Each structure stands twice: as structure tokens, then as C-alpha cells.
Length: 444
Image (cartoon, rainbow, N blue to C red; front, side, top):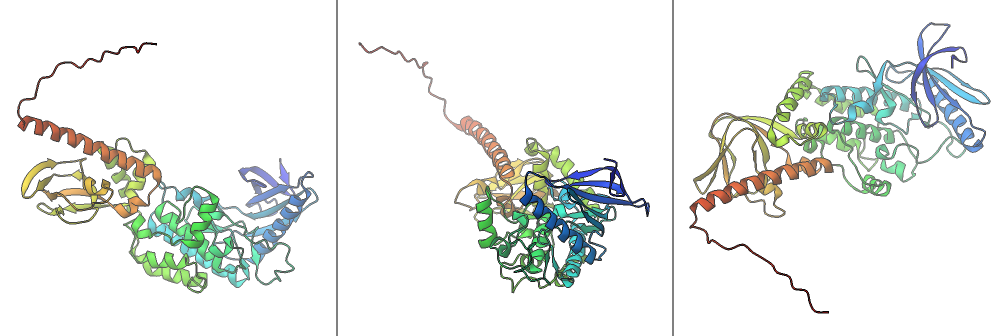
């Protein structure tokens, strides 16, 4: 394809279920634009009619919105066999790229992106527009970290009569990002977009969705009935001020949720000063490299190692500090990165552990008894990776399985060593003869 209307096609940018997006050049202005093209099929007239409506909505809505964080619509044309929308070309990638646990952005960048999206949604609401499908794939990020919300094809016009508006389709959206009222097919307003944006922020900060399930029915049940986990439990490095903000964005009760994007943005601005800078990314990479060299993490996949980093705290501890005290009940679990600790019971030294060894595994693995049976004290300045056990419980099944196997392997290895030591203290063993089993066939 060389042209779409008057626009000169340069290359394909992406393909979806119903549309193809091309990079093209506007011959009048000479600027590069993105052109979304859809062809109507003769074999499915009903689907073609629906797609025509969605294109009309996206074109009409987009041209009403004028905000630096919303993709601009320049032209929209519907022809008998096809339709296309000409829009601003964003030289970057969709936000979903940065939702993977091993590609998370520094927290100050994530909060900054969502902050700007709040203002964009506030502008849309003031124009009477609700997006209804806010998700990372519909937020483009340019080279300067500016978000651009796109794909208003499912948008709702609050100024129209919903009883007569044939483009009003209840329940549209992407299930994992849908608000409880959207799932229930209740009438929607701007608060549904703020809920979805809260899910996006949750995912950008933790690398996972607030609600996960094996099937659609279970996911819907959790969204409607369950509270999301704390982001600070999932990522202990986050400032505590983020928890109440995300909780308010994900409120099931509409009266307690943010009223508009400006309110959401205002609260985010109060915690931005607590954000770390770009050096955190370099530090995370260094920490990743350190963990990769430790024996305990030898079998971990890269993505699992990144997940461990997100739910852990690096602690520099001086000598003769008690990490774990026998008799206490808690689930502190961690790995010695550098240094040595002594493990003792009732004031008697049991063993000394160094780099790569794990402590706290017994209480973590025990199904019911979390009481500490030994004391752990640092012998010298020690670098300790403290794994947040509450966050670990909420981690991916793959990571949980990997951690349990690694811990069980260490416990069994130490048990073997303990057996050898006990055998050295015992009396001589009884010498037996080889066991033989003679089988006799029963008579017929």
C-alpha cells in the first residue's frame, strides 16, 4: 500500500484485531502522522456497522480534545469499504512495555507519567468525555517521557442521551482494568477512568495487577468483592504515602473514589518529592548482578530475580547486631550478601554463615509455628537482603515455587551436615549383614 487517501504510507507501525496503524506523511504539511485503517468485511455486516460507529466516535471525540497528553486527531474519513483516522505520530512505545517486572521504570517516572494522565483525563471529563478503556496499551510514551492517551473509539459522550446514543455500549473495556461498576454494567462517569488509571499505577509500581485470577469469572469476583493488596507490601521501597492514594483510586464505593483527575494529580504531587532519581535504575542493575552471582539464586530466572529485588530491602548492618532472636514470633527472611553471622541456641554457638547463605528459613517454611528457635547475630559489618515475607506471599506462583525449592534445598543440605556431626558424637554403629529377599511362587 502506497497511499491511504492523500497520505503517503511509509511503513506499518502495528496491527490489531480490527485495524492496522501505518506511519505516513501528510503531503500538505510534510509532517509524519499515524493512520489507523480498517476495512469493512462483506461477510459480517453487523460487525462492520459497529466498527463504523466506533470510528465515528473516535474521530468526533478526538477532534474535541486538545491536550498535550492526548493524541491529536487531524482527520477522519469513512468510505464504503474502509475508514481511516489520521492522528499525531508518537515516536515511542506503549506503556505496557514498562509493566514487566524486569522493565519497571523508576518510581518517580511512573508517578510522573500517571500524574500527567490524570490531568489529561480531567480535561477529557470537562469536555464530557469518558474513555472507558484506560490501560497501558492505550497510553503511548514519547522520547521525553510524556504520556499520550490514545484510542478513544470506546469513549462515552456524557452530553448525549444514553437512551438514544447507539454508540453507548455498557461493559466495554479490558477486564483487568475495568472498574466494579463497569463490570456490573452500571451507568458510568469519569470515575471509571480514574479507577483504571489506578490499576495502571499499581502495575507500574509493582510489576503485577492488583487482582489476578486463573479465569475470567474469578477475576470479576475479585474486582467486585475483594480489596487490593498494599503496594508498599509488594514493593517495600515505595513511600508509604502512595498506599492511601492508590487505595482511594481503587475504591469500590464511588463516593469515596477521586471525583476527578485533578484531585488524583494533586495527591500524587504530594509524594513526588519522596521519589528516587534515575540512579535507582543503575543501582537496581548492580544489585541484580550481585544476586546473580550468589549460589542461592543460581536456579532463578532473570524475571524472578527482578521480582525478588522489587520485594526486598538491602540493609547495611554493623557488627554484633541481632537479626533474629529466639523466642520471638515473626517471619524475617533474608540472604547474606556480604559478611558473616553467627547462629546460636540458648547462648551456645551453632554455626557461622557467610555470603550467599539464607537465614530465617525455618519460621518461613513452617506451616503453623513462626516462633524463632535460634538467634542470629552479625559478626562484622554485613550486607543483608531482607525479603518481605508478606510481599512474597503475594508474588507470582513461579517465584513462590522457586523460593520454596531454594529454601528447602538449603534446609536439607544443613540437615545432612548436622547428621554427620551427630554421627561423629555417637557410639559405634551396629554392623549388619546384607538384606536378601527370596521370593517363592505360590502353587497354582
